[in-house]
Amino acid sequence: MAVLVEMTQNIVAENARIAQDQDEYQKRYDGLVRRYDEAKARYDEVVTAISAKETQSERLAHFIKVLKAQDGVISEFDGSL
Image 1: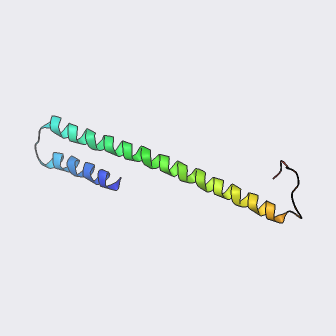
Image 2: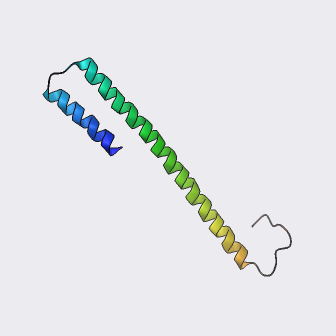
């Protein structure tokens, strides 16, 4: 994502320094913004998935800890487990 941000900043700076076809510049700019938005959306999905996995891992670790603390064999299901 940082590369896309840098590329966008570069074309904006280039547009400010050099006279160019504004339609072509807008197409390039819009393309970079679209690519950034897609990358950001994918990043957000991955972060959400990682967070869900971490939460699940914590819950399972707690469950294992509770099971290890039980005396004897567990013969019937207990909702608190």
